Amino acid sequence: MKKVFTGLVAVLAVATLLSCAKKAEAPAATAAGPSKVVVWCWDPNFNGYSMNQAAEAYKKINPNVTIEVVDIPENIEGKIEAGLQAGGAGLPDIALFQDYIIEKFVQNYPGVFVDLKAEGVDFSKFAQYKVGPMSEGGKTYGIPFDTGSTGFYLRSDMVKAAGLNPDDYQKNLTWSELIKLGETIKAKTGKPFIAYDSTSFDFLRIMVQSTGSQFFKADGTVDFTSPAMLKSIGYLKTMNDKGLLYMTEGWNNWLAAFNGGETAGFLSAIWIIGTLKSQPANAGKWMAIPTPLVEGVAGAQNASNNGGSSWYVFAKGPNKAAAVEFLKKTWASEDPAALEFYNTILKGAGAMGTFLPSRVGSNYTAADDFFYKSQPVYKDFAAWMANVPNLMYTANYAAMRDTVRNGLNRMFAGELKTPDAVVAAAAEEYKQITGQK
Image (cartoon, rainbow, N blue to C red; front, side, top):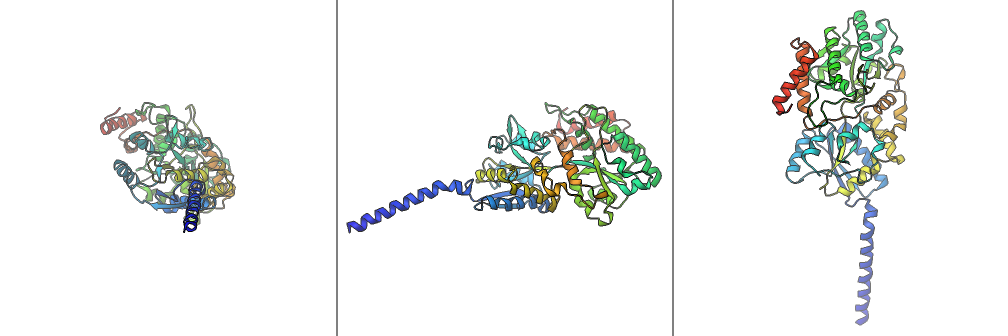
């Protein structure tokens, strides 16, 4: 009887030791604690696809962690705010935020996100314009995702129809030079030069941000009278007065204008390429050139940005440690598997990441037969991306955007005669909406 009891004690002791050993090894086996990380994002064909590809890459690194990607098709920011106001109830571990909205969350909900700089992420390896909006007080909260690197898309066949050589325009141009080109194309072909969406702020945004200028001052008040702002509005007025803008209303009408051959060009970001390729009849006709330069403004570049989002980890997330480790080992890693994942999402969804080491991928450098003379269009946009000046949005970005857009449309309608009148009207409306100057 004593032997049986002693043997049982020994067995239990060994079992306890083994159990403790397994518990001690658990963090190394799972790399970041819990076995499932939940991610919220929208657009399953772009954002969701990209995150799922990151999850596939991570399986090779740590098969014990599952990444669950949940599609939130509408009002993701509203759902997140509701969760934050409920103390974090129901929120995921990781969420995707548009870059222009994140400063509102950082300011309104201090401490809600994990400081990923403190977790060891090297942000010098990302396009720097993405890092500014996600940083505050020495802390950096997001993992930059896609670029909105911009360019001017031009129909090479219409350039030829105007008696010009498209090759002469595959270079850095100023807005004055582009306007001159547009006048020639319209005179020779009868086609308006640029498709313009009157419901969007994007055109002016791209112009102003190409100079490194901001729509807000450091103290958060609006800056409507910067040289970049007035100069850019002046260009738009000139283009409108010369009949170079083909006015559309709404996204679908804008797409139809340039995809249907109503105009010779338009200004947009890299993410529009998929839409262009939806019209295979236009293969070989489109070319992309650098964003035109705003002349006479210090710091102006032939590069800008429109759009883009980034990933954030909630500080109170149940699987925070696993979420951080996952992002570090995929989205912020130079491991070959991680770099190949970036290469895959570029080809699969046209999603160009802003992790600079990823630009060595074969899909980044390949010629693209859809474009004029098989332009390596992704290589070009990646090069332009590296020159995008720093950006700043603030919590009142949406109000600023809407008031300036309204002022521009009043100018296009002939009601406001000068750039100064446009910014004065925008400033007054902004004050009425926000109570701020």
